[in-house]
Image 1 (cartoon, rainbow, N blue to C red):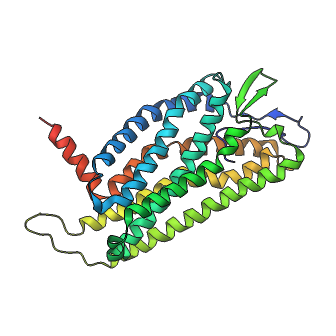
Image 2 (tube, rainbow, N blue to C red):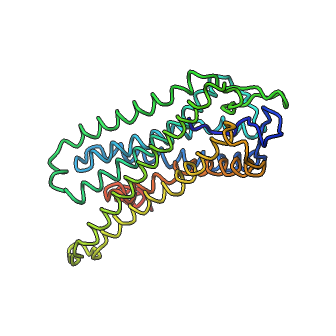
Image 3 (tube, rainbow, N blue to C red):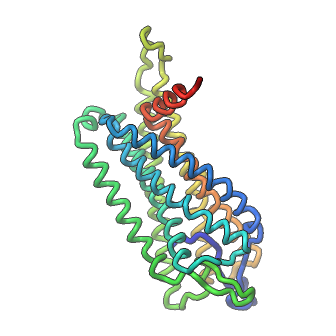
Length: 334
């Protein structure tokens, strides 16, 4: 499964087993990065949850509001676990909290990643349906559909994350006499290596299928929007022609941007990295292993940005969300 850190591994053909290949820059960079993400992500997602709660009476956006609310909850689960990771990296990769918290924070990292991916995907499908089949979308039981799909996403993700709660999360680094959290591929038995590798590549394959579906949906939405004639602005509203189309296109770019910035790099690097840490490519040079490990760390950091970028999706996905924020702040101005 995707794990939040690096692992013990054999480097090169002549290196001793169980050598910990580390990326020292993470002990400086990650506390600073997560130290910024924590307050910003907490404020942004708590406010997004507040806005979505106050929009519950708007039946026109019941379904997408359900998806956005669930996506916000997933982001908050990741954010509340960040203080433990900040402490972990500040102490040079030494887990000082109780062991069960290592398992919980590891599972929350996984849950946030794949709940975010799946909910962004269903938001894209929802927007595609609303643009290309507006009458059908408006006449269907959107609340029921949104609740069922959201429940399925949570069940799938929670079941997939059980491994973090059932397997030992803490491994002792005997060389430094410290305790690592989810950095223990060196403990994998030979009989388990193929199973672990297969699991990783299944997850990678599922991600790329979902990513392809998002790209196709967004391309079809863009084509449908660009084919629509630009209506003239109404004198009573003063709205600029094409404003709705531009906002919809910005939403497509935002969703695609979240995937490309936050999730795509990790899943591109994850495959070669798995082959490296599981000792399946012992012919690679030491510097190749190190570069893969460094790249893996950077992609893990990029995934943490999604809890800050997701609220931007809400602003572009619905006019109601954006107008509520504008009215909220306008009323508070003297």
